[in-house]
Image 1 (spheres, rainbow, N blue to C red):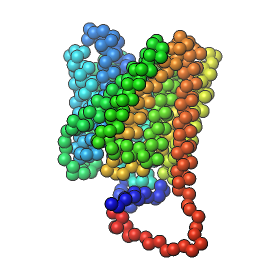
Image 2: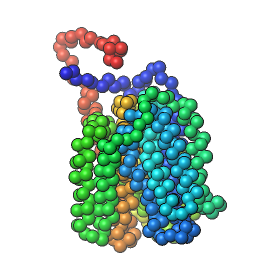
Image 3: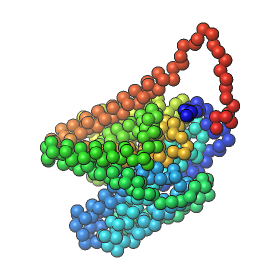
Image 4: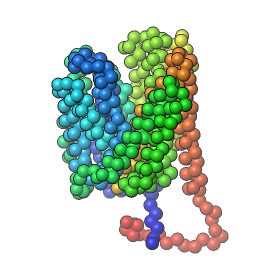
Length: 483
């Protein structure tokens, strides 16, 4: 039995000389990433109006938001595996078309039951797009431009999440709550033909997921539910929350043994991918905690209006948008790992600057500190994804993207729960806010440590061995033989 060894191109050299960059595919992938992240938060400001107009309770109305988020968190990794097994162009049409139709159904829903059902289905198609968009962008360009391509995805997604509440408030005031769902329908109609025209078909048949795929998704659901439930109960139930959180362990062990997940485990044995995945989990978790605490500080401590608070937190995404092209360019010119490390250090610096939460600050004092974090996130997000996608085999591009996106969504989901748990220990006081940001700072620092350790180990592995006294000639295999 022969042992195969992956031939990896040099990071600054083109992996596929004959491939032409398709920036139309990259921009399309970035736009659909913006849409699915937008729909996470755009509806939040409309929930009270939905509750009143549809005549329901607050507890039921919350499922309009939760019903979308849970499938997006649970299914993104299994969807990555499924997308690698079917035709790429057909999968794009299925995901974007399904997302547009379910958004239309949500906007036209006559009652709360129909609306929640539409939102759950919308979340299912969103999970497909979460896994698909980075893979489309990575496969659409050569290796020497993947940093820029990944920066588009890493910027457009968070921009959608952060601008969601502002856009939702505008639509609610001018049109009504249904516009929060209907606004994405014409955009889907526009990007659909662009993708069908530019995304190459792979010739694979379209087939529905099998029972083992459903089992993997169910086990992930149990794990995520146990973690979220345990952390949410931590402030009130003492040590008992640990027992609930530990239920995730047997579910993950069973998931580990499923044959359909073997490619995921093989990818995670690649150092670049495992380091990137862990850094994305911790980076997203730390950012989500910061993004959760800051608005409360603005509204409750600095006593700003909602409009001023919204403008202040926009400093973060605006800095991301400005510095994202720089992050992608530096990653392509040098190497993505060191650029991502610089970004992680900037994010940690931003949290350190914000952590004092001084009551005599003005919104401007907070805004420039947040902008430092936005610049760091721009330098971190695209390069760290490029580092992983360069190391992933093309046939497993969606699986690799789904793995990374699953880590990002897990961090985004756990962040508010962890921040709330730490904050609640101090009875939701200002010192409790600082404690939450101290935890965020620790996690942000861990992100930099993970990247630094990964780069150090990679450099040590790549260090050439000592030159022998008499060097024997090395036979170079023809390029065709490697194929």
